[in-house]
Image (cartoon, rainbow, N blue to C red; front, side, top):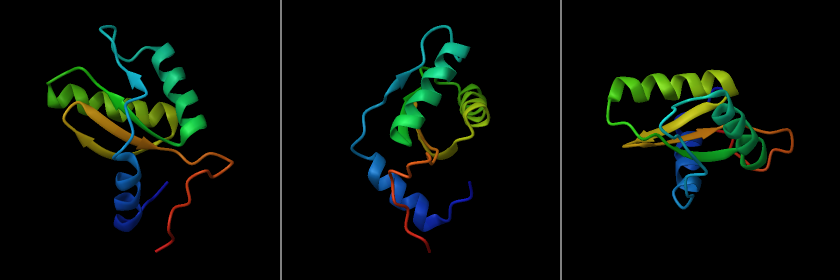
Length: 98
């Protein structure tokens, strides 16, 4: 899904108050974690994920894999927290069209 700057800013604002719903453990990105992220995206559309690594390159690869496996869009990556979005069929979040 292609989002413009205004839409990304809007989603960042919505995500500000959210708590991370998925925390990656020591095993990293497993199939079970991807399934949990997929379920959470289907339920919430916009989620935060906590990635417990300081290595910027590893973090980038994990985020890329998550987005690829779940067909989600990365909204923001700050520190160890990534915000991702995937529109569900119910379209719970109304994104402004600009």
